[in-house]
Length: 490
Image 1 (tube, rainbow, N blue to C red):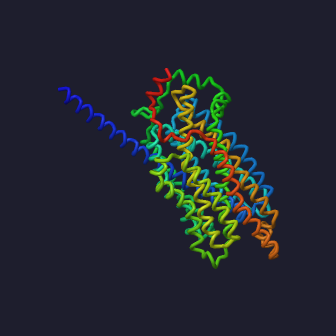
Image 2: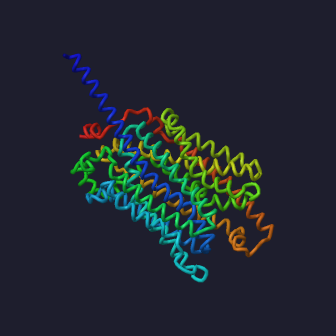
Image 3: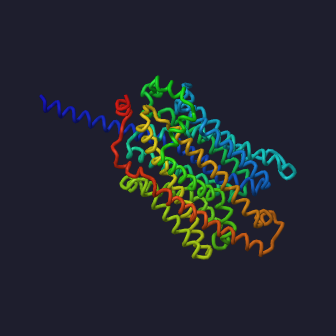
């Protein structure tokens, strides 16, 4: 009888494990479907908006700088505010991640379409182009923040297990692989962004597809903090009231008191600066530095599309390696490769073929590293729960803390690069006001120095900071569940 009970117990445990795995896989698919939608929207927006306003709308540097400055201020404000509301509010649309995404998705899709349609004659009304850019950036960033914070928080809340978080990462990279290919399709359909009407039609189709994908995904998504019956978040009521009474400053002070988190966020600041430069200026720099006879139109399209696809392939292929050695060591290796390739480029003396290879590697690897960021941040969320005896994680506030640090990089990079380029004749050359070969040669020289110096400097700073990070072996740590954390904190 006892043997039968033991055998039955073992079989029961095995069944529960299998069901749990199926649940995580199903959740991973739903989570990845949202990632697919966000990847389509954000890859197109970040890749094209600078090119559109500089080269199509001909926005002046004064208005471009002003718009980016306003965007920097607003984006730094809305991230911590939204995160605090999502993690502490008792209003369902804020504290229930699924509802946040459900109602935010259609508004995000509409805001994505806004920049691609001109508002009037920008040649005689340059202020209108500036206003268009301000509204487009701020509205898109507001709604992206609203949806993205909830989606990012789900990454830490769906499961505590390192391998299951890696599964979410892997599924997400498959989704991002398809979502980021929107840039490649946009290049093909718009003929290298020369047929604006086709591009506009494609963006409308992408917006509708993204909204539908998010709408379908949130219907079935579950996490450790949601009841299976109705998706309501499982909160301890007394702790929720404590969070509501705790000021935003106190909670963020607790979050930023963790030295590992501060290191991770500043490492990510330099990563975001580097990636923003790559996303926004790749097509501009490649068009100037690589002659068309060496890189024909079709290959040029493939180059621009590949840098949004290769990072996902890299992460998918190295998931088992990351699970074995941990995200810390993979990050460190990628930083070293970044510095090494920058040195090789400098030694190549701007050879066009080496430039092509460098653009692919230097744009892809930082994006690949960024795909592992959520895994590392989730470790810090777990450490915060244990340190501060929390039952419910402040997931949104952690991702908002990251946004507060990296958002300045997203504005500083384009402002700085545009200012340097225009100081060396970029605007005059693009507008046809000058064809002086000496000025063009000087511009190309400055561009080359920017191309190798940015990854070189960013990589060195990242290595110096990352060597001080101590959460290195989370992939070896036994996971906790909601129940065990709750019991240990009573």
